[in-house]
Length: 422
Image 1 (tube, helix red, strand yellow):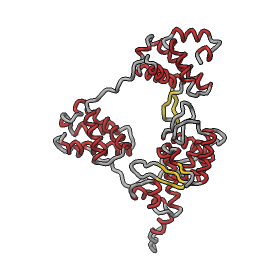
Image 2 (cartoon, rainbow, N blue to C red):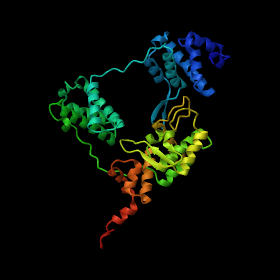
Image 3 (spheres, rainbow, N blue to C red):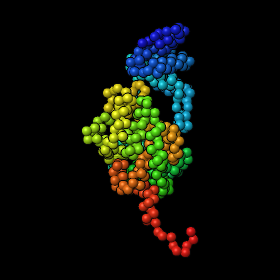
Image 4 (tube, one colour):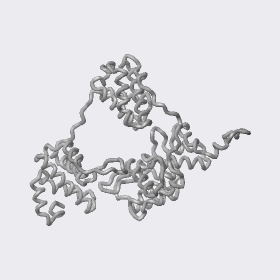
């Protein structure tokens, strides 16, 4: 398929494309993306987006695509319209924003555009790498936790500038540390500020142990006052959580997939990451068992594959899942088909909350995890059983749900003193 096949009657458009910098490569690009499996409408939108990208290159006078870089693609995407997904997350809605990276990828495949340049190395990179190794070897943190710690530490080291090296860290003063924490923390809530200050304290303790600073600078970091189990589980009532299962349209491929995801979350109380990590090999149909991967350094969980969950998965596999060699259970709907991301599970759950009109402090997958744990405790399950099913390494992590077990709490309450005012 080529440009003439897609736009047989638009001679002026074809001439415009031919004169542009992408003209010699447009037919090859169309042929490459048409083999991916796009629907005719999606394919046409993608090609139109590539044409818009070509017009942009003309306006910035980039006539030689051998000089095309990722910076040009990013600047073009930034110039396209955006909307706020869920009212707060910016998202580019123009098909051209989706097409430009595809064009860049194709031009690199045929050795026309230059390869991507490696990100610039910062002076603090060796120190950051040493600290990351320390977190893994001496603190036993998981890769996900190390990544979160790295992001906070990288921002802190970036603010220190040239002094963010092992040899010059001695120049850092307590005033600079306090100034950084005050400036950065003013835009965030208490939980984010607590994480930021805790990680900075941990890094400064590492620097003190290694002899990179002359005194223990942790005294410059004030702790954010928080109290263990001060908050209640932030999820919906169980009856409201079950109502979410009625929202997906199970006559569509998306509805079958979303229903299976919601049912797994409500049935087992697992995290979004664990749902998207399920592979076809994790389903033991003969033994009727389902295994979820470990998350946040916890334990993997093997649970019974209940008939409703099994039927929902079978329905999705037969009538909703795209034919592919990928072993992940849940896939995207649009081509190119790829494994579903954990962030997409949030969108599935948020959409169900919105459609059902259910109010909840939080509307993501973790809210259903809270509702599940609260339901298990109300049904008489012990904290140890709930901790094992949730994959918690420490029982103390699960104790927050004891605060909403009102039946047991009433038994522990003292009698009202005689003669006291009510």
